[in-house]
Image (cartoon, rainbow, N blue to C red; front, side, top):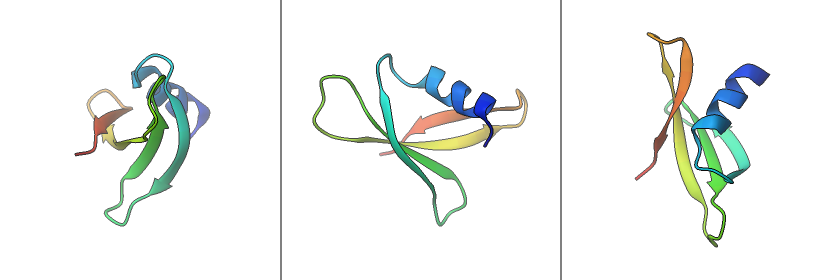
Length: 62
């Protein structure tokens, strides 16, 4: 992913969230692990490509 796509991902995260790491999952998508402000645990998001709008979108992992 390029800088523009990372910025689009960061804009979709809740305000103040900090990306801790990212990785490519076995299923082929990119996963982002973030820490929300005031939380002690990590939150996982899956990054899916929105082909209609030509941008990445995040989905909260269950």
